[in-house]
Structures are given as structure tokens and as C-alpha cells.
Image (cartoon, one colour):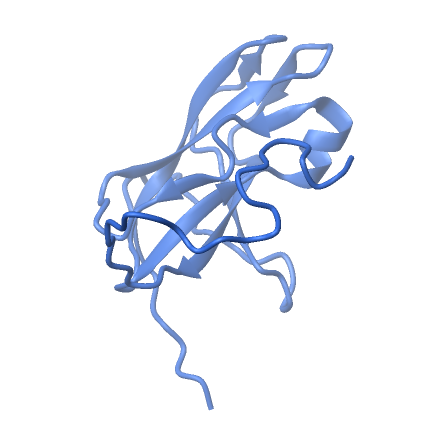
Length: 148
């Protein structure tokens, strides 16, 4: 039986909503805009949208901020640095960097679900400098080197 880890959330403003899972099998938790009035995101513009909460991740974990698929598909609204990474030692307010890549201005309303958070384990890795790397069939082939 797997032990469940705790994600500690601190509400920074009374209007902040805690992250919620849309379904029992959802990988991520929806996060909401904690804004006082609607925010119009113009075409080609970006905005840092506050969520009104801070969190403490379990040790050896990160949180990834990911776009909402419906907003991305229907309106071209994306998490600009997606997925954005929140490190386990960050204790400031969680904010979502949204960009409107669509063709019309998009309005974000107070309480709207603006993104989702997925928590992932981060393995402990040690960097080791070497003279040469093990070879592979791909080698140094970069963008597009494996086909389409």
C-alpha cells in the first residue's frame, strides 16, 4: 500500500481557492485565478495570474504548471513557459504565466480555472564530468534527426 504524500497549501488571501482535482483519476489539480476583477489578455500578450496561495512540496518533488487543454485548443491561451516548474524550496505565491496565442482577446474572470498543477518526483542526480560519452545510434542528431 502506497503512502500518500502531503502537499501543504497556505491561503494568502480569503478569496483564494485551493487546488482541486476534476476527477478521481486526474493527474493534476486545477488552480484558479485569484483576481478582484476580470483580466483581459490581448492577442499576443501575456500576464502573470495570481492564485492566492503558496505551498510546500514534499522533499524530492517539483510541481509543474500546465495549460488547460480546453483553453489551449479553443482560445490559444497557453502557459507560456509550460510546463512551468515550481521547486520544492519555493514558498512564494504560485502564479501562472499565461499567453494569448489566439486570434481574439481573452477574458480571465475571478475564480476561473487557469491551469493545472502536476506534482512529480525528482530523482537525486549527481553530475559527473567525463572525457567522452557512451555512443548511441542517434549520436549528436538534433531537431528532426529521427524522422518527421
